[in-house]
Length: 412
Image 1 (cartoon, rainbow, N blue to C red):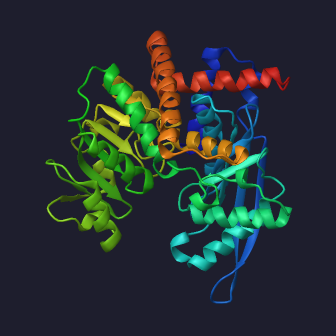
Image 2 (image 1 turned 135 degrees about the vertical axis):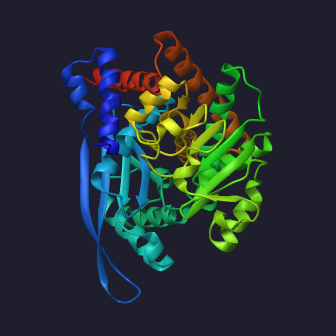
Image 3 (image 1 turned 90 degrees about the horizontal axis):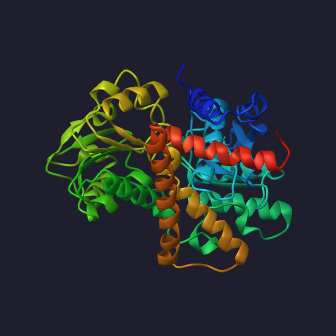
């Protein structure tokens, strides 16, 4: 069964075999260090008390404090949150920043909640988790359907409880509360740095290639805009209501304006309406999944036309699909590398909070680029040497770093 956690375990077992890990070492990476499950109760605007499931999964902290987002989503069940926490540990190790992996969530539909109700949910989550998070312990961040404003509520509630200022508790905050410049575009910018290195390695022309992006939220939109400005042709984009395709190219800024004013990219004139499934198999050179997991599966992989898949979302490709794509010669840049720009700039935010000294956006990106480029080059070289896929190479290098830290601590 293709659950996100089973997909993680499949990749872990492959890495463990190549690294000759002991059963004890592998077992330590199969399950989280700690799973926190709580019920939070919130008074809705109607006066009704509503209960929500709240989670925090602390997967591994051998390399540093747990790090990972909080999502407000109807499907934020414990299996999904466990998988995302595990992938955060791998992701931080992939780009070699000193964090472990964690993930949190509230099982709710934010689209059905008012701004005031969302604030109450955020504060209730902070109260429930206050003893389990902290600047040196576990550092949350935004994820699906959570925002810098929600991070501000969590920070404020936590600081009230603890009676002290602790801006490094949480990242992805508003700039005025100690957020880092560049954080909003960091995931997309990091992915583009990696893509440009890949294009060089493949000997292709910078720009001029066609791009389809599934998911036109924060990361998807910024990726589209950055690539458009570099000369790439954006031929398809989609949001939760569907997508559009235009072989002559789309202007991301104009499409975002339509989405904001009319509710969906599908309202753009002069483009063919397509589904979120069809965008995965449309004519393009580069496919960027920037929506939810398990989008590229065994049943639709054969129809994928892109030669490069750049995974900005978490877990968009199943292990069975990975195998077919490799046989087809499609280069898949895995999520643990492609979208690690976000957590890297979260790390920069944490560092800045701890120093009480802040960098310009130019300084942030000047520090981000070499980290992303080195991570890509290390993974590319290892993949070429071992004749394996980039995902396998990334997992092996990351798992090796995590296990080394666990060995040094005497945990395995």
